[in-house]
Image (cartoon, rainbow, N blue to C red; front, top):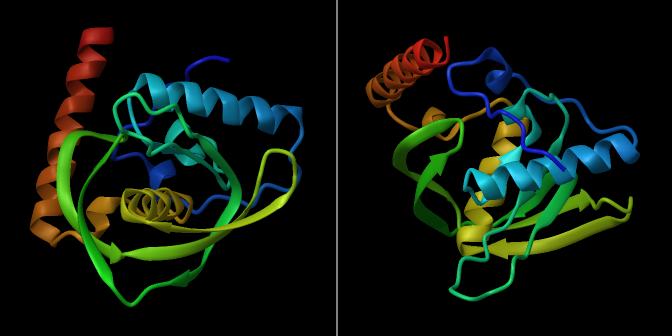
Length: 175
């Protein structure tokens, strides 16, 4: 396993819809393992393949945050929301591709998601709370949507300018 560099907004790959994963072979298994390691090291609670420049429908998440609770990673190939509650939840979201930036986003409080697991088996589960927010956030990445797309245009522009400045600073520091 190895960590991969995480793309920083704005990057056109973050606004591009990802392709379905046709086959879950060794390469995709390794990618999923690398994504989990990258997510944990960042640290984050979710990561989508487009965030590391791979335009495939693959996400990883682990929202087990209670002190002393063991990791509870989930790897989802081709996830899709098949049901969402009418009840809404407001959660302060952040993103590894938009570092140190947070904003409140309103999403369905509960969702049912279908996906294929790393063994190739179909799965379906109901998510609520932080897990529901996270899985919807990551599936949005697969559709080329960022959490800032839910914000008012002015706030979105301010965040984009901040990220452009961060990218320039990082590029100067590396160069």
